[in-house]
Image (cartoon, rainbow, N blue to C red):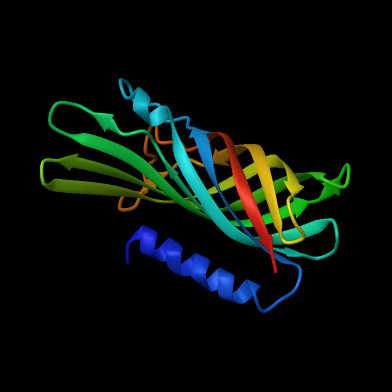
Length: 194
């Protein structure tokens, strides 16, 4: 099953689960990310877009826990005969604290921890070759600032920092030099409360 299909199935399951309970938010958004990839001559792998989706269960008015799936991608690198892109898919357990500063503005510090995957995709003509590293542990820490636009819908902006441990080759367990998805993330999101 492709990563996109897996992500769609997981988000669909989360949506079905969330509708059965009160005080549950479905969240999603887009991000722009920097990465600590250090491969000589490949500056395109230093940043790129991403998106995330997940669910938050509110234990009380201030504390929420949940899960999130995040997809990260680098900008595509090109030469005369091929193109390459790095991608990462993460599965994170999350915790968030909600603080209201007025009737319309809230701040939510958050943390997420889990597993990050990584893959390098190279296309040359009609041929595509992919290399996948073994999953690595990672964490994300940041803050969301947002507003409730209705009793059910909220909009947020977010900034955070992601730390991912070194990736290793699946077969040899050797560290993959220079492959590091640690970096800044900035973006926006939407939440829907059931």
